[in-house]
Length: 211
Length: 331
Image 1: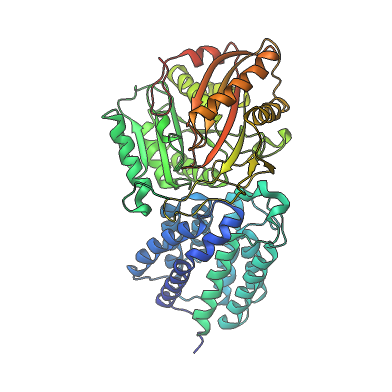
Image 2: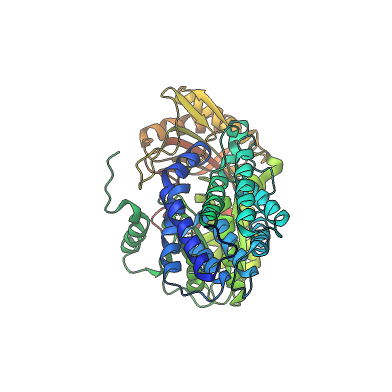
């Protein structure tokens, strides 16, 4: 039964589902990172989302933004590394932008992804095409803006498809940011590990809403 | 890989506790991952370093008298989070501001940037100098894209001396920037280190191949070549440094650092030093001081780096000042 909008408690369930999926994807994410970086992306994500899950489980959220902000602050303070900063900023800025909304619909999805993208690009300086998680987040955000009037199940499926397409596109890009940049053309053929994480997050969110 | 560990996922936290024990009362843990020299003088301009762990003795092993005042330690190979940096910042701040000095890596830059904003909101003045000595990581026109590698040892030592005498944060920034701008390094990787938590190698390299310009975290290099003799390798490395935009000419005085990335032996470092010194002496360069050993490491990674810092009348007295730390001590 798909959900037309989410209550704060449903957002909490969705974020826990995302955390479980990321934790279970440790090996896949670390392997992706061994192609382009130092192979620790999965471990950092596992550490961050294990802590975030514990914090979110303890919440009795009154607003939807609170769930996301708690996730962001916990990721930032427990992960470290580039991933901790950008993943933390994604949830924190996205959550803060939702103000005191107590339901999560397709308009919220658009607001969340737009603020998340803005926070991440301001912090890290990556633009589209740099072969980073911004590529997956930006295509997700575009889909969210375009689908803002649609029912949530349809909109979030579009956003997940956007994130996956953005992640797939990073395979053909040459890395210009972070540790992978010294690889140059050798980075072609492998997806950015952060973009893989972003695609997993939105795909899991879509599965939760459309279950 | 056999490693002496308890819970591999807790290695970073345990090594920081061990580091505090090494300092035997002169350093306090001021938060998880945050350490600071205690009893800092009240008017001191503070120097804070930091980065991922697993590269000991850097960065956190470079605190002590005449060196850095505190350090923010991340997990293994991962930048410290903003709250850890903020804890260390509060501990070293004596009201005259804090200089953040760390390697130019995306994760470190982002986390220190957030920490600097949080510190500013508390009224602590923070300035930043990024270390970017690795000539293999970007062309000279794009220094802001270069990584920080072993050259951070002389840079942090010079910065520590400067922080002991600087009258204010602006003077410290200017001295440390000069030290940074006068330092160049090149690294070569022979075989990977491993991630303590997984035991997996940080990269792959054929048995007969070496990675020229490969990073200390095992980032893949800019050129893979066949293994060569120590002399041929030394010559290639020195030439890459000398070809950069820092003029090093006859009559110039330099600091020379031959660094082991971990498992490369002192024997190998000494053999490389012999050739590097011969090339520099041939050019008429005066070697003022030599540092050698495993100072910037990546677990059991095999590899070596050569760093050169050009001295001038401002930097030389800073180098001569005594200092004491786990990583480097000068009497």
